[in-house]
Length: 164
Ligand SMILES: [Zn+2]
Image (cartoon, rainbow, N blue to C red; front, side, top):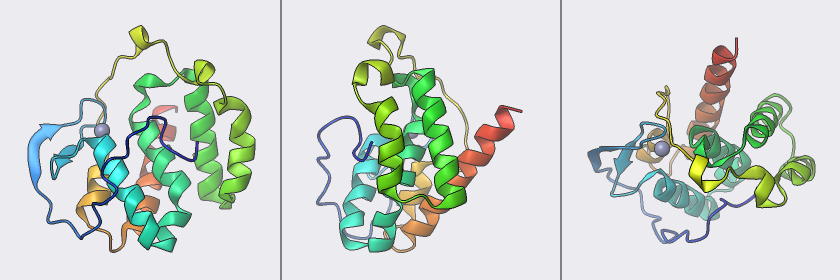
């Protein structure tokens, strides 16, 4: 869980402060705007690339990846998502070190068969959010760590609202 589940972070050189170009295309899962020609997956790669130059942002890596996955849940099993929601809440409440989270999450995330849904069942469902990865990216590298924290907290609040 320390790296996004797919390969090809091809945008790692995208390190200048962006002047966002927001197209009218939006993500079929989180509803976020495609920005600078990036889908959400591309935006995740760009933000992870910033981590190399921003230690504070790097320290929030788990939140970045967890928040991304929780807003793009189609490929994950219900069990995996439940574990991820809980780990994110613990990270927010207790500031668990990333190494500890990896240890706890290791069991549930090792072996992609239990984590990922069969491909035929992977149906993206659009859901609206207060904040998406596009909001984190569009502010540029400056202050990105704080926006990741805000993003993660907003997801946690919205998910616990919807669970009653
Ligand atoms: Zn999205």
